[in-house]
Length: 213
Image 1 (cartoon, rainbow, N blue to C red):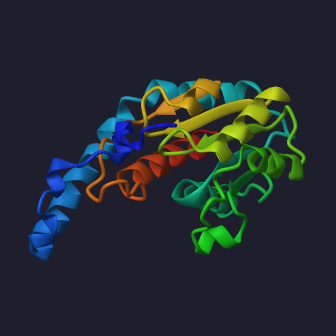
Image 2: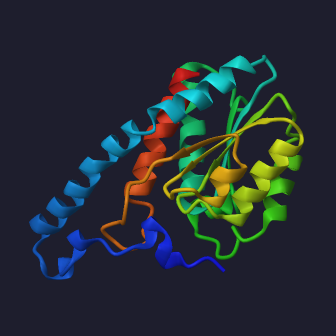
């Protein structure tokens, strides 16, 4: 069993000490101080990001689809980026897709345990008729989500290009992904709340990928 306390995303942030005792200005000042760090963390991963983009482009055909897959916040961010591609770039809704553990209902309401099955990740890709011409990018701040792991492993098995975006060093997801991106943003101001810095970092990287392609 993985010790969550060993994940940087789950550690305590010294900047949040006694934050509940502060006034609103001090609270948002501390949040802003943490957010400032994110772009520099992303900068450290530019080579990894460009490697994934280059791999996508070198295998790109008119049949290629970009599939983001994740759970919780990560899944929602994938859907957000995918949904913005048609109006921004004039591509079809099928060209860039976001899939979230638990289906459409999970976009609006958190679904407990939806992320815990490797088989469901695989099944969701089978249901969209994933082929070797497609690209699957797994999104998981912790880098250990079973649903995402199952999806990426299945994509590998059929010869698709795979990438991942995590916020944990040497994660399980990175190990099964062909082109891993590990953006280490450190502990959140609200312990374990990866909707914050981790989510911001993931969205920044998704912006880069969808724009460069």
